[in-house]
Each structure stands twice: as C-alpha cells, then as structure tokens.
Length: 177
Image (cartoon, rainbow, N blue to C red):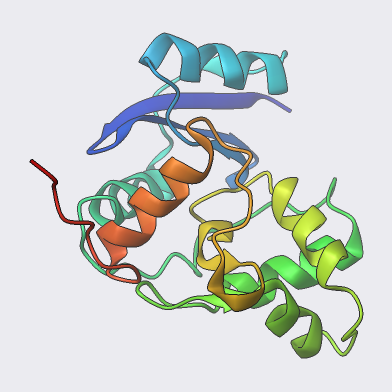
C-alpha cells in the first residue's frame, strides 16, 4: 500500500497531509518553511511519496486552508486512519473533533466526557501525540483555567494561540507601539 503526502500553503505557512488508502494518517502544521514541513513529513513517514492530493482528500486540504483563513469549517467528515492510534487517544480525539471552531474545552472537560475524570493529564498526553493536528483540533483543548497549556507543533504555544485567534476563540491581542 502506497503512502503519499503533500505540502500546501495556508495563511500561517506550509502545512502537510499524509494518507494511505484514501484516509489521512497524519498532518503537519507549518514549519518555518515548506522544506521544513516536507522534512517533518518525510521523517514521520519515511516510505511516503510526495504526490498530488487524491481527489477524495482534496476537500480536506481546501477546508484546512479555509479554516486557517478564518472561515468556519467542519473537518469531522475527514476520513482518518486510526490503525496506529491507541484506543484512549482515539476516544479523546473523537471528543476533540466535536469542538467547533471558536470554542474550546479543557483537558479536564474531555476527561469527564470520556467518563474518566482523573485522566486530564492522559488527555494532555494524547493531544501532545496527536498525529492529525487541525483535523483533530488539539489546539482547541486548553489547560485548567483556560491556560493555553503546551503545544508540540512547530511554533509551540504561539502557533496554538494564533490558530485560536483566527478561529475567534481568543481575542486578537492589541499591538503596542
């Protein structure tokens, strides 16, 4: 089975999408350059071949670009390949996928929805190892007290905050002169 990937431009930089058998196996938030995003995908998926996105996944790429342009888009229909994802993480990702643009939940909120109220830290670890950022919107999951918490993608917490501002969940910070 062939694994493919593509790198595409968005308003916050070049993102990437990897797939197998018509389903997404991973995404990449922008690195500082398209080459860095490409290198990140090649490292995660060493057998992948850079290719044009298949027709059945074109809408996913278009929706990611639109979402990062500030348009509300629902990515829950994007087909994901969960075969290498632990069950707890998959269940946490399913809850996160239900968070609409402009809204947030905490790690504790997700733990409660999973029926495991003491597992906020495990939810945080699941979000930190999310292979599908943006499609599984881990950036919409915050720490206690709506603290941004961590973010393992390139750019770290600043990228997370930027995405939340684009989606309208956080106010844009005023420019100081």
